[in-house]
Every structure is written in C-alpha cells, then in structure tokens.
Image (cartoon, rainbow, N blue to C red; front, side, top):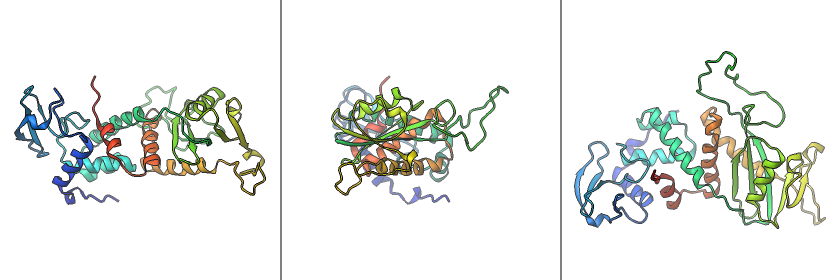
Length: 307
C-alpha cells in the first residue's frame, strides 16, 4: 500500500537537514571552494525553491545540491529526504516513484549511483574481533528486466530450483558474510563462487591473523590460515561446547541471523538483477552496521566524484 507523505514534510526543515548532512563543513562554492559568505544571493530555483548563490571569487553559480548526485535535479528538499530514507530502508523504486511523484527511471538511476557509492565506501579493513563467524547464503538473482532475444539463451523461469551451492553463473550468486561476535560489525560481499580461493581471500582480508574463525563444514573453508573451529551441520550439529565450560561457543548462529536481515531487505524488490546485487548488499551492510543514519555516511554517499 502506498502512503504518500511528501506534502506533510516541511521543506524548510528538510532543507536544513540536507544542509547539515550534505555539507557538514558548511556550504561552499564547488568550483573554487570559497565559503558561502563569499557569495551573493543570485536567485531561487523555480521548482525546488532553493537559494542559488553566485560566488564573488570565481563567479560560479551553485546551490544546496551542487557537488552532490542531486546537482541539476529539480527536486524539493522534502522529496530528497524521503528518497534517501527510502533507499536506506529498502523501499522499492516503483513505490518511491509513486509516493514522491518522481519518474521511475529517475528514481532507479539515482539508486544505482548511490549503490555504486556505497560499494566504494564499504570498509576493506579487518574486523577488530578475536572471535569471528563466517558463512554464505545464496540469493536467486538472474537477469531481471534484460531482454533475451537469442532463442538459444531464453530467460530463466522464476523460482530457481537448482540445488547445492549456487554460483553467479547459475543465477544463485553467493553472498559471503563475516561478523565479529563482540563488535557485531559485518562484512558482506557478493562472490562468483564459494571455492577455497574465494572464501580464504575473504576470511584473510576481513579477520585478524590471531582471530578464531568459526564456520560450517563446507570444504571451501579448509584452506583458511586462521584458528578454525567447524560446526558440522551435515552431521546434525548446530552448536558445540569445545572447552567444557557449559557454553556452546562453536556455532555460526550470529551470522546466520544476519541472513534473515539480508533477505528481508531484498524482499520488497521482488528480484534484482545479479549485476546490481552488490549495490543492494552494500546498502544493507551499512544498515546493519550503522543502525541509525549518520552525517558522515550521508555526506560521503551523496558526494559527486569528479571525473
């Protein structure tokens, strides 16, 4: 059910929020970096009603959206705030399009840009924890929306029934996840397969050398160079007490719980193209790690990179 509320959002309050989150160091000229105090008020945009400034230093023109992915867009501030909120909360592009009165292709194109930015922002360092869990899930993701004109390459039927470990090639790309038991921080990455080389590289990148890594019994984990504890699901084992202290510390229940969050995040989209899956997972990783939106995250997410 659609529930449009854009008309209930005060544009002045929304503009203030955007200023704080888009330009935490203060609005400045994107051409010469001079502060807004070095500019004069020039005019207001017709649709978004944003104040436009002309820089006295370089004679450049800019507004609140300049230097961000929303530059040249004629959105009201309330639309931008609700658009960002929808992206972070996993609302579908079609629903956002209807509720905000923005065309579907425009919403989708902005989503793609922000997803690419989120992938660039994903941490590449190791988790600080000494106790780690790693697991993988397989997400049905084919070539949604892509025409298959070659009769020898028909589109796959909905509901991929292939059994066993999925791969990118058979439209069940793996998502490899690692979580620190103490920090609760995760690292989620889409992979092409779950062989030993892929899983070892993931574990070695995102864990400390002295960390204890707990996984299931999949053979792809056999080559990891870490203290390694295995829980054998194939033998009906789900948790084990290795040190006889009465606590079953050998399990991967924490990371398996993350997969519920990931699936719930992806469900509203009713299928995604596998080449865009990494972008959705990048946003989902920030949702899990941040819990609440931050100025730092938004300012980096919307910043337009210079080509």
